[in-house]
Image (tube, rainbow, N blue to C red; front, top):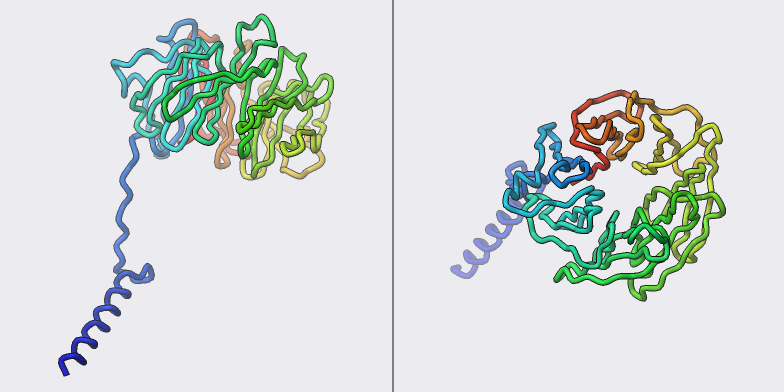
Amino acid sequence: MKQFKKIMFLALASAFFLTSCSNDDDSFVDIPSIPLGDYENGYFVLNEGGGSAATNSIIFISNDGIRTNDVFRIENPDAEELGTFIQNIFFDDTRAFIVAGSGSVTVVNRYSFEYITTISTDLEAPRYGVVVNGKAYVTNNGDFGSVTDDFLTVIDLSNYSTSQILIGNYLDRISAVGDKVITTNNQYGTEHSVSIVDTNTLTVTDVDLGDGNTSNSIAVVNDDVYVLTGSGKFIEIDVVNNTVANTLDIPTSITNTKNLDIDNNTVYFTSDASVYSFDLGETTVSETPILTYQSDSAYGVMYGFAVNNDVIYIGDGADFSSDGTFYEYSTSGELLSENVAGVAPNGFYFN
């Protein structure tokens, strides 16, 4: 009898345990996640600055619309400056890497923005970066005197040691698919290729886009690589065979095409102060823009551009010595907000 009672008790206890642990039970308690930092949910506005480090800044806009100015200096009042002409922010799982054109990459925690270290070796006029398999790859323009000296800086993120891979083209934007990184090569409109680097073998292969097709921006969707040229070509790159897979011609009435971005399988790009779009897979592009905004800037029109979760972000550089402006638009062209930026807002980065 005692054994029977023991068995019944265990059966009832097991049933109670399974019932109380079921996600379908209204009494189930969901343990809240621990916040990763003050900058976990929202986006950063990168303000390039003028000729001194003191003129650059990073703004954070939370998902609740709360704005924090100059987050790097707020969180790191005793850290060294970011350098001049900050160009890009790129991420790994826990870190943000801030690229300064003066020759450094500053590493911070991507959620708290707490300073970690500054990398300044094997860098010369760095531009943009990406992380692949525990290493960062950063494009460098070299001394600007020759395209033959342009290179990638490779940063081992386990110890921040650096090395170089010579590319030999005028490097700018960069993205990654699998174990390969892809760079746009645009020597003032004369280059017409992208470079594909196998990060395992460090071999470099150039893909010719055809005369006059200078790539100025790049986007990756589901391991498919696309570049946009200033001459109005939307080109898909086959990174397996290192060839051009497809080319879509943008109408000749739309000139100076740049700022490629792809969001929810819709392609966005700009021409002067206008934004255009078409769906991936379409064979024609409408000549009617989504929106056109007003700008008095001689050189800062669409200085920063991004699309994320059906919101279009635009940075206007103004006169590059005083505060610029950044805007949020819906993908139907409705102005959602107009905001004061820092000097030369050139990019938007999403946590």
